[in-house]
Amino acid sequence: MILRLDPAVPVVWRSPTAVQLGVDPVVCVFDGVSYATERLLAALAVGVPEEGLEVVAEAADVGPDYAAALLDAVRPALLDETAVRPATPRGPEGLRIAVDGSGPAARQLAEVLAGLGVRLVDALPALGDETDAAVLLGSHAISPSRHGAWLRRDAPHLGVVFGERGARIGPFVEPGAGPCLACLDLERSDEDDAWPVIAAQLMAKRSRVEGGRFAASVVLRVVDELLAHLLDGSRELVDQSIELRPDGSETRLRHAPHARCGCRALPGTATTDVLTLDRFRSRPSSAAAAAAPA
Image (cartoon, rainbow, N blue to C red; front, side, top):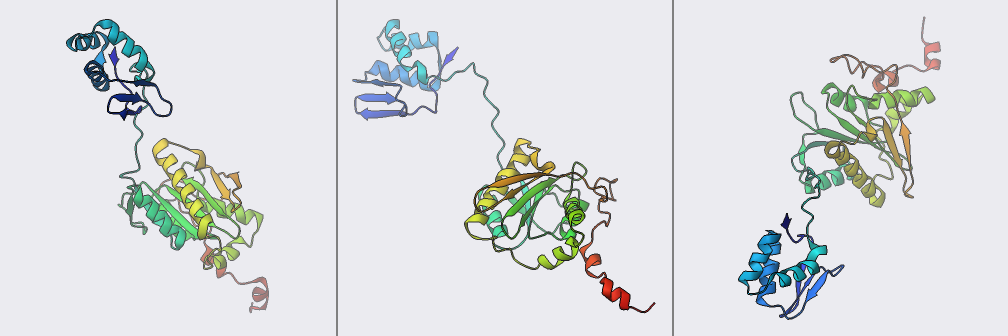
């Protein structure tokens, strides 16, 4: 067995003749440090078999009892070489992420991701471009033309919408694996058939909460959820969204693929036009229809 001091335990000098292992907590203190103590600690710092420590002790003109006593003192600071160490987690460096949106929150998100080493790619999707994920930000609603473009690419994308009093993060759309953003629009339309017309008007209006401290907290939460999905394999947001509010409270909502959406269709038909805001916007009102000539 290899004996080795844990690199996470600091070794500091209290004075020219006193050395301490650990600070919070203190593991042990050696006063009047001798040449032998320095040699033994140096060997433990790089790692040495137990019998090898005795050889170092003999070379420093001290016996095995001295080595055993020092070993007992530093044992709490030794690295457990038999423990199974978790694999080094993959970092965000090298991820290719598109920030699709404008406004202060989109700019903050791009800055945070770039600071983590993420490679920012063009937010205008083009077939053949390689992207690990896109984040689509919008005020009140996201245009079907925007999220439909990412769906056509079969590219994973996360929706972030700032509303009147809060923000919604999710779902994390994995084409063919769960609901898409069009499913959420259809879900909203089931509750209020005027939603497509309302959404078309709201898209041009900037949300009043898309700025300041709240927006900054939303951006950090988006980064956490994004990296949890891409690096840690989290699947929580594939069929859920999170509603955040400025008071710190949050609500999780569960979603399912909508029966009238084509996002679960065969490849090449995933963007069936089940909800086109332009179509609803151009639809004549009932009064206009009644006045129109037969």
